[in-house]
Length: 69
Image 1 (cartoon, rainbow, N blue to C red):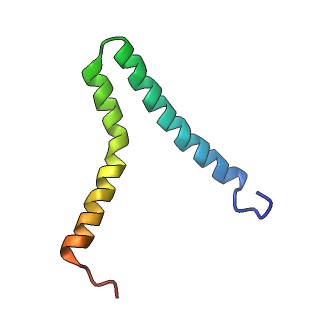
Image 2: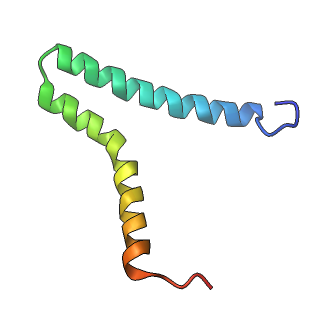
């Protein structure tokens, strides 16, 4: 914070991202508590999308061996 790497603009972005994750997690818990298990799993699937995209990216790098120049 002292060297201005974290500004008030950056902290708002981080709080927004962490708040969105919290809303998704709490929403899925609420849905599960009210016996909407399938919908709760679909909502949690939203969080899995970035991880799946990263795995696909790594597989593409390993399988196709791109040239980086």
